[in-house]
Length: 267
Image (cartoon, rainbow, N blue to C red; front, top):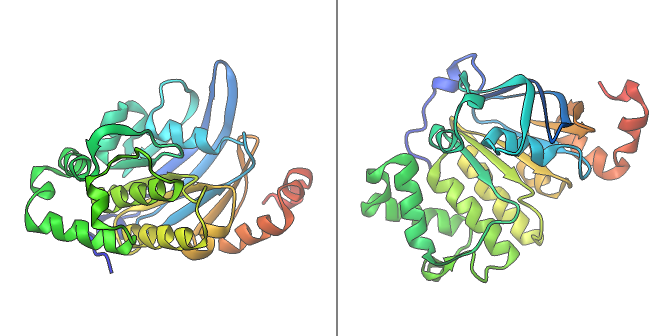
């Protein structure tokens, strides 16, 4: 079992949420996409956002990370009580926000092993990225994700299959130990075994820790293995319903029309 270092209790004992989004309104080129969303994630919790294409799921992730194309007209986003919207994207990464890309870019010429060491050094400090302790943690995480050691010599995302790209993203998550992981369509392109392996890595990185995760997905498959604390349904830029993991199964069975067409169900 993969174990994190320095798993503290400050957030678990505090009433301040790890992530708090309040009344967030945002859009692009004058078109509003998010229409007042509210999400609160505590330490050790995993939440999921589900919705149709164009509902605002990926927009939410981009705004948390600081994508410059989006305009915020109202609302707040706080990480550990600190205003995220006032930070530059690199400051958000340093503060502990991690985004797993839906379509990660290839970097020919940069080996995976070197990339991981440089990334850990940049976020967690030089000492965390060298010596036997780092090598042990790397080996442990790779074993958890069923990644062969030869993977370290390959170039970043160069010729990777869809499944390899997703496992590499979760490998970074496990080593970087961010406060907040935003996982955008992490289950896309994965077979059943791949979904199970990636879910195991996410649970290992977040559960019983000071971290939290926000998973963005269309389907319930990965959520069956993760069992999120809350599932939020996003329709036309608004969260119309929140519930436990059973809500994801209901969406898989019934789709979204029942929530969109019957306001009484959206509670």
